[in-house]
Length: 401
Image (cartoon, rainbow, N blue to C red; front, side):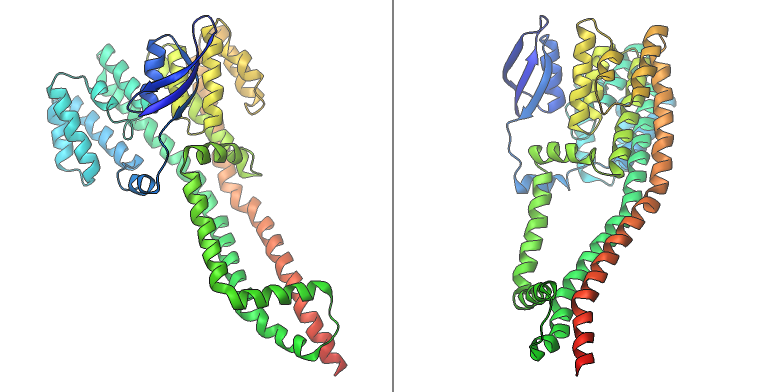
């Protein structure tokens, strides 16, 4: 893959160009080895429909990764060689794609590669964070503990994301059902209700005329409306799977009412926990910030933490830069400053992670309670409008007869 990049060198000059790498994470590593600090990296490859469709099949779930790393840690603790451990796990793997990846990893290790280098060839499966934690474990001689760190980290991120998804499932289902019922009512029920109004040639308000017109249009061309709706939904899903669409949606997510705060807290939790783990593993802060930025899951926060790494690289403080960023809570920058001054930044980051995780837990539990009144008000307004626009004229006409 080829990536367009914009980066700064050691004296602050802007450099732009193209780098070829297997993944975005590898492109970051190549730039860093050449003393370039990336500001932006964009893939030259355009997302095709077939590529997006196939990506849903060639994938490894977080649950499968957790089980894999847990089993690997147990086998390493039992003094089973790495190759033997991977073979044993691969033989009971039900995911054919993951099984194929593990077979390639085994061959690479047999050819003399380290476990971390073999994992690095598969960026779709193993994150840059996991690879660097394992590499640190290999260097320190405590691979089992590093593998456990990776398993705990993936499991924790999975649980955090699952809580947010679960909390949003109810309002999404209610809203979807409301739209489906609304389409059926406008298409098949309203035309029958308004038939009497039209036959009486009575004076009706403008909003009733508008509802009648919409109902007649839907009744005549419901198939075309359905095609447009499905096409719009399909087009939106396709766009959200492109590089540009993902970046746009990343901006939208953190600005949404109610749920936007939850997303921001999730990203803060990931940042603090992952950075704490990397610093505890002995990885330098500049490299750790760069790694963390690639696994946050939001391009807005990725750019923020890349710029924070740049600030540290030129002799500044991470806390001072984060203090100037509006979407970073003041509590975070203040606590990080305390950690920088006391030399306990990894411990402080862990406290930040626990605090915002508790905030996410509380807000996700209350999410349905917060959103339900809004949904009920919207549904009530829609039902009330139809009642006024359709039932009231029918009632008035019946009273005049």
